[in-house]
Length: 598
Image (cartoon, rainbow, N blue to C red; front, side, top):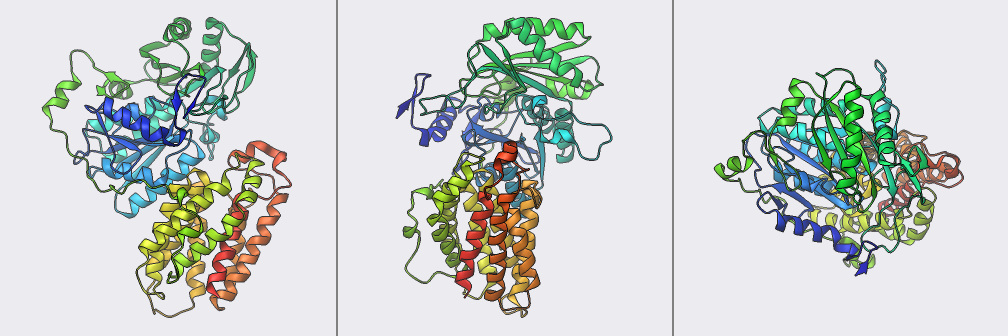
């Protein structure tokens, strides 16, 4: 156990489990744990015929996200590790526990890992017949350009989701609570997001559980305007601001962006980032209130407090959402969660809860959470007898594990250097899952397909991060194509695997939002699938080897590309001259799989 500057000792490796269990113990009257998952579900769900609103994100932001689960707000929340997205498996299990048969709305902040893992979970839910919609929260005006009317591509789609997600969740939860269908709940949540704007400022960084030094810092005597909740760079650095100066900065950055319309009322949220005291926030709000009224706006039911934090970061953010009769009614609607309760007039949410026997959570996901990272590479293999999918994944694990340090070095050029560790951890889980799911005969593509589908989800769950979700999608889509094939149906296997590679490319491109040439794993996957397609009439081992060699050459050539997608894109030209870690690891995996086909 280590002690942070904040004064508390934590076991970093169990922090997520520990705090979620404590929350469920403290607020058992409102929420309970999702069996076998890092998530909480409201005691009021699943409710037959009700749309389930499922939110989520990383630890370190409480009350977001688990603190906003309860009647009238979110039905469930999936929780990731500190500042990391929950895995697709965790989102899937949490959504399944909340599903009442009327569909699921997934809503979360616009971060690469969240987009990928929630997207992968949505695909699995849809494949099981659970209708699913997604509303990304993009309220942070400091993180991207504003929307442009009539423009086909919305430049604001790259904006981060920060404290304004409270408004989106509140509107969605109220709409679902009153019985709106999935399309209506989605429309209203999307409208709330389109109208919401947030701007923040930070005076000091934060320290993660178990760390002895801050994750990031703000210079003494300065204020970072527009800094993100994970320490992402702000718009500019200025001198330490007084309360009035800070309020003016917040308002001045939001008023020009505030959408027109509404009835003059505006929902207001002054959010503390973790260390700023309530009394200090009230001083800031005093000036904010006067500025908004001077601009002809009427602050409606303003909220001052902590809604989306960043551990012990010092700072505040201001969120605004114009209201009309429709949104105002939903914002007024009652709710009861561990962190936020709304009781309009004399109406008591507690009376409603007592009058209705809570429905039990379906225990469909009671598989215990496993940490495959604790299994040594060689111990993951059983002596002989592995079927094709398991054998291929084991070969990939062996080769990637041998290059783990080099993959970490490549990733550290533009990231945090954990790519090798994460992919090895994910492949360990994939091998174990495939071995358990591949009972059929060696020549049965359906058996191999089911094994790869299960392995993909296991990989994404264990690996985490954007790369884990992408590799999970790649394996899952490959498995989906193979599982639809029939043993002994004739034809060349090369054509079947070319179809699988095409499907994998589409899935990775859709989830990651990347294109060939943007220095991602797609730059290795695309030449592989094209070469495999061109050689579909040849024997599979020969065709695969040629395609894997094309992928290896393309991965090396990514050194000449400038990253244009994801976290590496912020490095600009500094990322030039180094191959992309994801492209290199994919080429290694494809090469290893080829050795098992000979």
